[in-house]
Length: 461
Image (cartoon, rainbow, N blue to C red):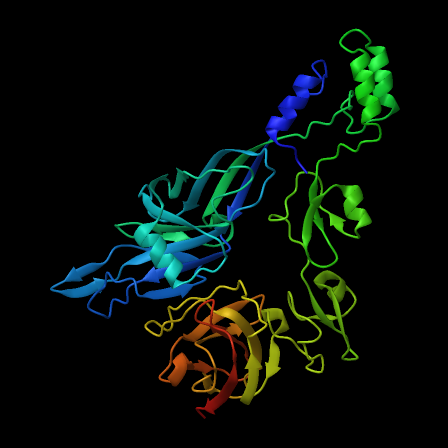
């Protein structure tokens, strides 16, 4: 790995006449949030400044203060929350600057922000409200032309942050929409100074120690080289000076190593000065084949050979390959018809597809945690009834889209229906011959379980 700066300086002092120096490589890294939510006060209640509700996955988050008139709420308070995973760096890396920036629709209005460090990726109500009420990082992001930007008072010490995840809240008193998708989404911009590893014995700077270095020393004997330099080359003969990088291994993990060691381990190397927290290594889990057998593989290998990958960290002991489809993502949605369907979200991951609570305000639509998907082709003109009412072991969320995964439009949602156990119920108009996607998830990071999905189309003809 990378030697510490003090070690490098000591070696430079020992070999005073080496032409090789510790050069620096400046890297600019931009990081978008892994998750985002909106805290808001339900303005139908009297206390419209009480941030008691949460919405997830919005492409544009409206933020603003609460307003009252005659003792009644006119507008509820709204705050945007983002969770950023910060990458690991070599011990000798130096953070030159960190900037929080984004875009909004309100010209030059400032964005007030607060932040807190957290060890995990979980972003729920408790982390959000705690950060907003008592953030350890507090400041104002100035803006112009609809773009806001502010330096962050964070540090990188020995390649480590205070914690792995930084949660930031955004707020504006007069009201604005903060864009939250694509290239316009808020991001953290890091400028990092990473000194190159000092390659002892590499006299001609070709990242190896071999005959060419001996010839280089002899050709420049006395100016500036001497006996000590020849001894240095011989001592480090055959060294590979390649900087370490991220190596995606066959078990789904990632390690920092050079290309030779990565190849020897059967991994895929991502190049020098790449980092495991920034590369997208294939997931490792259960792969089901057409003959209903199971094999633990990387997701890329499974899909490339016609298998059905069942998700990160799944095992053949926990997966039933006699079930033909796995519906953890939209593209793997299980095809269903009217009736009842058993489901489980215990092994599911959380999809990144956009949803919001605009069509189901006051029902406490949550984070859509550990969601699963179903596709439904309508055979009637009328009302689609979708329900987990009284038939699930956890606090469910329901969202229905019209269309396909590539072109889908949300048409209905429900957080807590008039059911027990915070289960869900919704009705929405549908047209015969159209395709619909039904998505079931959990209210927060602790909400996952089993249940029965009920689907019914009530004809209006």
